[in-house]
Length: 343
Image 1 (cartoon, rainbow, N blue to C red):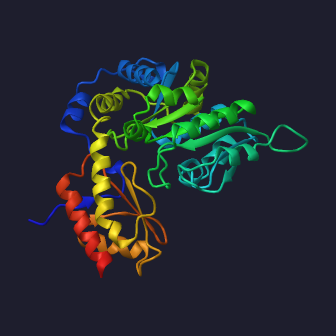
Image 2: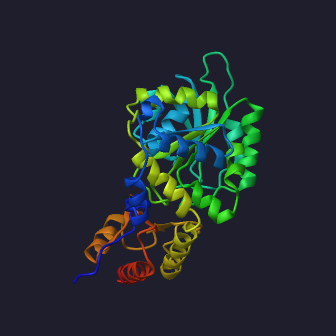
Image 3: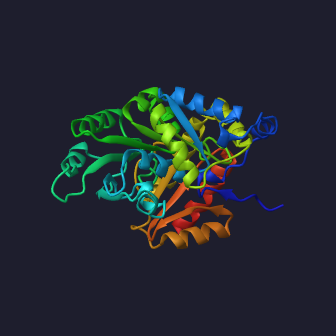
């Protein structure tokens, strides 16, 4: 029998475990638009408490959660600051402008190595026909920054920048669980630094669907209206929320296993000079500029050998370890990719 495909494209490709499926099947449900789904309510309360905030709102996707949060902190026509590679302006199809009427301005992409001083110098106050800055957004961990973890000290300095200018601070925390496991920063300590967060259940945690917006009770009250307006009002969503609750109970600490597997991949590929940045979590970015390959060529050659990887740019590829990638799959992927790079 042919070897199974090793899918390293993303941690979004995970499938629910047997225990998660059992939790979903047994979930108590109600109509969430009426606020009557007990499993959704329990998930929202649990996540809010983890981050030390008053409330949370379950949303079907991470992009929707981000865009709800941005609309909570930036009025139409005003400005959001973020980095040029941020998910909110790179992979959400212009939603901030299309849905929120939000003007975005970016600092040069630096992944997790952002400079709060650069951000402070970009803030525009209210003034004569100037677009005022209302919020700053950061990404933890940073996707296009190779899964890098923004240091706690940097986030604290960014909080001071925001406070000095009366700005809100939003965290796209799709993979904040990885940062928590990698640096052992308590989730509540991250939560204390941000006015709003979005946190994802369907990446490394392995749930099939779902993210949450986290914030104050007042903001989450408004978020429910925005979610409905965007088509995110769900009915018996407890079936999905149950998967998220199972993931929180069983799949957070095991993220360290994914980090270790990513480090093994990085070690195997390091001799070829293709690592774009140090590997801190479950993402392994590959910079092919010093090779004769482009990213599509590498991906095609790997696919022919049963290994799937992501193409992020002409010479930039990415590998992602996750719940469905075991040690044998890591070894096989390392062997296949090394052979291609050696040609």
